[in-house]
Image (cartoon, rainbow, N blue to C red; front, top):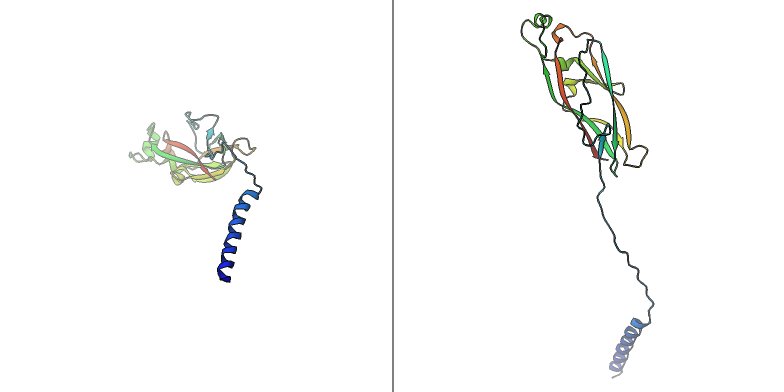
Length: 185
């Protein structure tokens, strides 16, 4: 009987504490509204064009040993930093104007390999011939997001028509597409 009485008393005390505790506690809540999760952006701008629609390289009438260059401005107007790269694609070497000295040097059979005689450089650093670097993504630099002092830069893209190019390259043409990309860093 003592144990039954002790059990009933214990249960009564526990119930009393639960009821009393529920009404005797202090509490406070805070609510945060209009929370957002949004994706950042990458937005590459080349020479102030977005989308890029102009021709950046148009060097005609180059002579062996001649070097020409073009300055290209790259800017990330997105909110995220990105690794910028460049690629030469759609490389087409053609005979172009087939003149007598070229025909004689080639033995009457056109050899369209001027792309192997044009060396490309970026900011003075040689990358290789156009034929060697075609369809290869060339890493350029990290471009921070808009508002950063490192969101844009100017690069110098150079082209050297090698000095030892002979008559077989007269009038030949190297046409290509220049692709720029920006991948999330």
